[in-house]
Image 1 (spheres, rainbow, N blue to C red):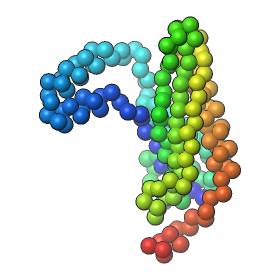
Image 2: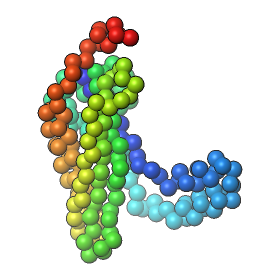
Image 3: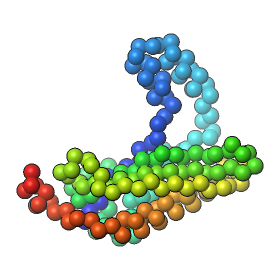
Image 4: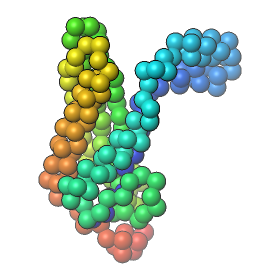
Length: 178
């Protein structure tokens, strides 16, 4: 079986609230919202590369290394896959409500569906959640905790997908049934 189009979709973004106001032609609310949020943004505490690109690429590499599928193609590559795996990042943040004991939080829901003919209906899905403590005030400890959490999730995802008994997906039978 071949797997393709691993895409990590970012969670709800606060700018959606401002865009909703703009779509409803409430320009005052939209302008005030964007001005407040842009002024509050801290560009020194953001990801250098969009997490979705890193998560999608790392997921593809992990599944290829685990030999769960005959081949794994990352998102953006044109392919005719038997299966498509989509990942939705539900949570990716540092929880510092207790300043002395912060946690790195990562939650990803993966959906596996056929490459064609199923109208995008998932055959399998699972939510993976991790909360790992890290040293307060250390950006590198936060990044290390996120990496550890993601590594644990990828290991569990690989084992879960390997344990699945997937129906045979043949291009010939898929096209003859249409």
